[in-house]
Image (cartoon, rainbow, N blue to C red; front, side, top):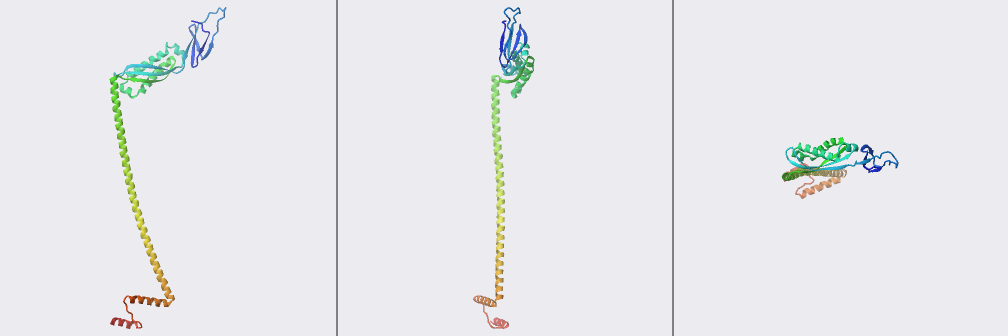
Length: 289
């Protein structure tokens, strides 16, 4: 192997330095220079190698794995795994290829999980697959310096006849849901209409009561006004009579005029009077006539 005199480690990476095949340490990002042997140096030349390890988050896809479920249904699943190297020395030294190892761990975890579940359970919650795979692979990946951030089910494919049946089931569920929504809307409409009818009936009843109350108050007011008017008329008549009586008392000639006026009105009605005769004689004369 050629002698390495300097190297550059990119950002977000680290370098693992080997001298004569022996690991020496981790190099941080940047340029690293190594001593060159002199022209007449008797020191043997050291063979150096730097393996650069990427520390960024990466993804790996487990494509189209055909797995048999607990109820003997063959399905094909694709899983997307996000990971990053957190211990570069362990990732390079513990396993031959940490990417291949992650792939194998995800494959085995998916197979073990799906093989223990019925199809209905798998369809009920696809996130359960993702979480189970992530937890299983995460604990294994720590042993070779890799952190599994998350795992997601990318695709879940079923046999053709099963897809047809599932489509029919989904269509039936959609129709049932549509009928349920229509029934709920109809029931809601009926409820609103019933509430509106009850409210209208209540308002009509209140209006009738209000009209009856106003009519009763109007009648009472009219009766009170009529009574007050009659009382005022009687008071005025009495006041007029009192004023006439007082005037006649103050002026006797007015009483005589009043008497003559009364006799004139009576005479106009056919009454007869005898003037100048005593009362007893007048009674006898009236009786004789």
